[in-house]
Length: 115
Length: 113
Image 1: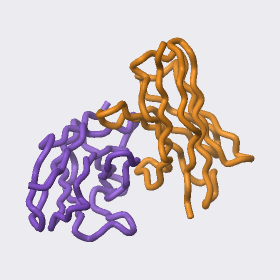
Image 2: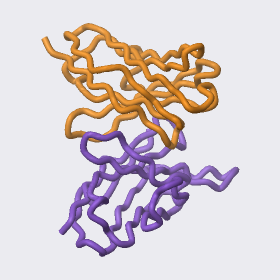
Image 3: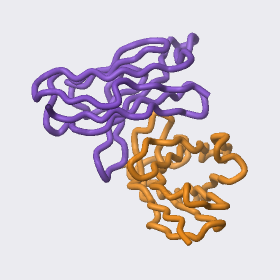
Image 4: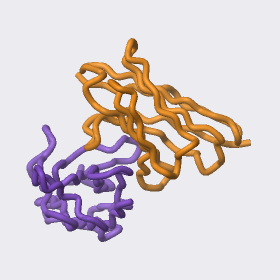
């Protein structure tokens, strides 16, 4: 069965970077785009960007342009999202999701930014 | 960017009654070459990731109960739950995937009256 399993919770200081992983199983990793979505506590869903795991092509929301990098390692069927220059406003649960109309989601990774 | 606006922000419906959530996009999300509306609906329960209910505005995802239906075209869309069940209490989001950024509506919180 299709699964997306994300890395564990992170606590970071302001100005640091965080890298979240998303390991896919149960399907051909390169067949579908990945999207990354975040959600601050009690807030709505915010789309961050997409990555084609076959080509490595990416597209980022302007809000995150220059601060986010989405990559992959096809040999281990894992997608990554790295966010730099963290502030307290980046405290949120970060989700990876398969496809634009996202049929499978990771369990979420809580990233807390605190001094 | 396409702005997605849901209404209402919250609603309470009696068990067994119909619930209707609306979603309006600031631009058409209908791709004329394939006549598909690039609009999805998700359900999110506390502590869980969103769950895809509907895509192409009206296609039910596999395993989703048939009391959930989507309709609409162009810029105006509706999610209908025909007979509300207790397990349907959740926040519902629409999302356009017509053009990046793939924006979400602000969410609609659905409760039991």
